[in-house]
Length: 323
Image 1 (cartoon, rainbow, N blue to C red):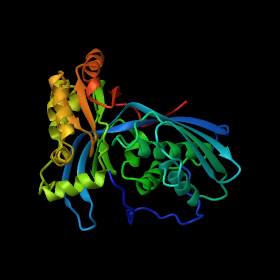
Image 2 (cartoon, helix red, strand yellow):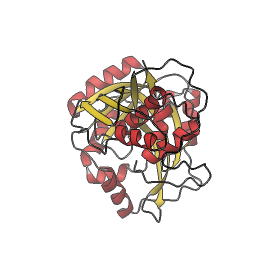
Image 3 (cartoon, rainbow, N blue to C red):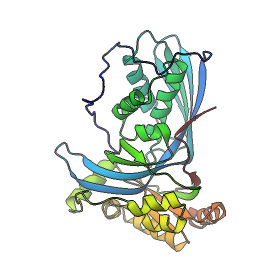
Image 4 (cartoon, one colour):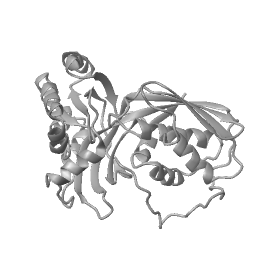
């Protein structure tokens, strides 16, 4: 999802250098290094409304954190921020959400040290799996612990929203419903574990072109009266068949029009025996729901030759964990 800078007129505003209030006094022993795992995010349903005056679309999205992880090591430094990235094709530049999150937290606090980050990528890059947002969430929570700020969750949520639309979800993960641009969250509890085959096409697909094609095709409909009730109820009941039948994404026709191989890929997943299949977000990742872990392994093996990368992942999982 795309992020814009929101206004929070109903929340207290912290200015540059103003210390944020702590949730509790820092009684835990200080640490200088922390390791975090950040989970990937998938969209089980994505309903897209009409285009707003600011160029963005209102959405209703059922999101789930799944077991594909990035690892982030954070160490306190004397001053400044540094980032090293291990893994596929992601430069450690200033636009990386790890550094964006660090700067966002630092500018709201006073007399803090710096930090050095080492990011090991396990979540595929530019695949619509929220890896950048997950890394930003991990950095925010890790620095809150290392700097012993103990910020209230409302403050962390505000900062997460300013970093990116998916970052608030990635703070906690699990299964949730997002509205607005995806940053306003509500519960969508899931009973039991779902097993997914995550199939990624070799050709990337940008978010902006997909939304532009969505508008050009005249597919947008108002969101009033549209809600993924069937999916939310199926998740709560742990009914795998109903979950599979309720997967939905309004952007699929636009993405398939731009990249017909995605439609062929979805058909392959269903032909191979998936309980259900859907494109996640604006693509190019496809999700296939399996009956259980064994079936997921069989399904992944059957479709692996058709995709650039295929992974088996369980969900829901927490967004960020420490170890």
